[in-house]
Image (cartoon, rainbow, N blue to C red; front, side):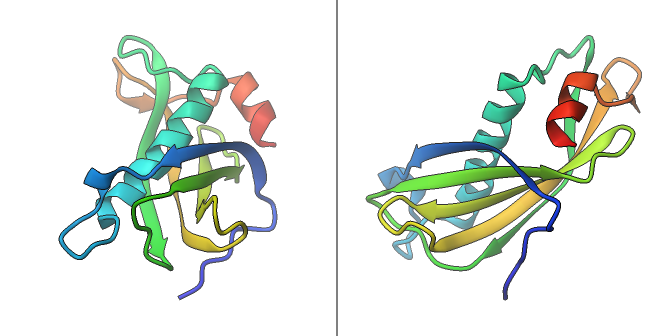
Length: 139
C-alpha cells in the first residue's frame, strides 16, 4: 500500500529519534504502537516550538484522528528521521503528515502517517479559530 502526501503539504519540522531496544516486540521489529509514538514526538516538538503548548485552562491542540501506513519494518539499532508536514488549514483545524525513514537509509520511507488537529477551548470543550501564528505557519 502506498500513501502519497498531498501536493499542498509544507515541511515544517524534522528530527532524529533513536530506536530503543525496548521499542521492539517479540517479532524482532519496532512494535506498531511505537510508530504512532514517533509521530507524536515530532508533532509535539513542532507544536511546542510554534507556541502550541497545551494549557488545560486555555486553548490548544487536540488530535481527532490519527493514521499510519506501515511500509517497511524498523528495527534496533538505528535512528529514525521523522519529517513533519502540515496542510489544509481550516477555521479551527489542520492536517499533519509525517514520514519516517532511517538515517542510515536516506530517502527510504518506512512509514507515513498523520493526524487531524483541532484547536479547542479546553474548559468549554469547543473548537476555536486557529491562532494566527499557527495559521501563518501552515498556509
